Amino acid sequence: MSYFWKAYMFFFAVPFPMILYYSINYNSEIRGDGTNPWLALTYLLISLVLWTIVLYKLYQRWIALTLQTKSNIESLLRDGVLKDGEIVDVKTLKPVAKDVETLEVSVRFENFSGTKVLQTIPINDSKPQQNRYEAGKRIKLRIDKTLKSRPVFIPDGVQVELRKSQMFLSIIGWLLALGLVIAYYIFSYQLESRGTGWRFLIFWHPLLLCPLILLLSFLGLDALLGQLSGLPKDVLRLIFYGKQATARILSAKQTGTYINEQPQVRFELDFKDERGRTHRVSLKKIVSLLEVSITQQQTVDIFYLEEDPQTIAFSKDLND
View 1 (tube, rainbow, N blue to C red):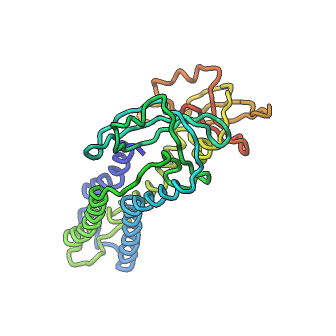
View 2 (cartoon, helix red, strand yellow):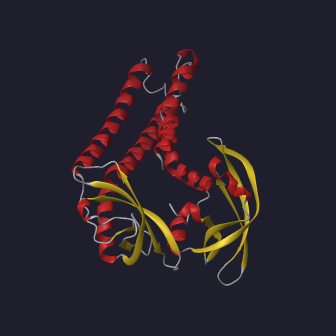
View 3 (cartoon, rainbow, N blue to C red):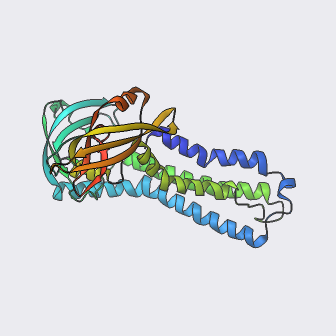
C-alpha cells in the first residue's frame, strides 16, 4: 500500500472522527444527562477490546513481521525452488545504511507454468563494487512453491540480518502508540467525565470510532484497492502459476466510479486458452488518465489460471 493511501486511511480513521466529535457532539447540552451507566460500561469494554486488537495488529506489522520475515528468508534459502532469471533494469534508491546501495532490481524469469514474468526485488547491496546487479546479467532466485512465505521469492545466496536501529525505532513507535492511546483515555476522562464516570461515552466517541475504523481499514482497504486496480485475490498465483494469452476487448465502459479523477472501467473480454477453448470474462479496474487509450485497443495481453480461467489480470498490472 502506498504512503498516500496510508495517510488517507489514517486521516479518516483518527483526526477526522475527532474533528467531528469535538466540533458537534461535545457540548453537555447535546449530551443531556449522559449515557446509561451500563451502556457506558459496555462502550468502554468494547473500546478497550478494539484498541487492544489495533495495538496487537500494529505489533504484528511493526515488530513481529520483521522477525518472521528473517525466519522466512532463511527457510526460503534452504527449501525454495531455484530459478534462473535475467536482470532487465536496475534503479538506485536512497541508501538505508552507509556503504550499502539500495536497489530496485527488475528480473524476468519463467514461472512454474513456463510463462515469462517480470518482477521487482528490493535489494540492499553490501558489495556494490562487485557490480553483481546490472542489466543483462543472470541471477539465481529462490521461490516458495506454496506461495505462503513472505517474501515469496528472493535472490539466491542473499544474506539477511536485522537492522537494530530499525527494530529499535519500531519498538519505540509501538510504545509511543500505546502511550498515546492510554493518554487519550486519561485526557477524555478528565475533560468529559464531570463527576459522572464514563457516562460521556457514546457510540461515535473517538475512543470507539477510531479503533473501529482502523480495524475496518486494516481488513478492507487492501481488498478494495485490489478490486479497483483489477487484481484478483489470487494475484500471487497468477504471477507464479498463470499462463499468458491475448484477449479481445469486446467492450470497455466506465462504471461511474472515480478515484482521484481516474475512471473505473469495466472490460468485457474473450480469449482462447492453450487448449483452444474460448472463455468470456469481465474485469473492472481503475485506468490512469495517461493509459485511457487502452479502452480503444482491440486486444490486450492477460494472465489467466488454467484451473480457473475466470481469474485473470492484465499482464501489465502483474509485471511491476
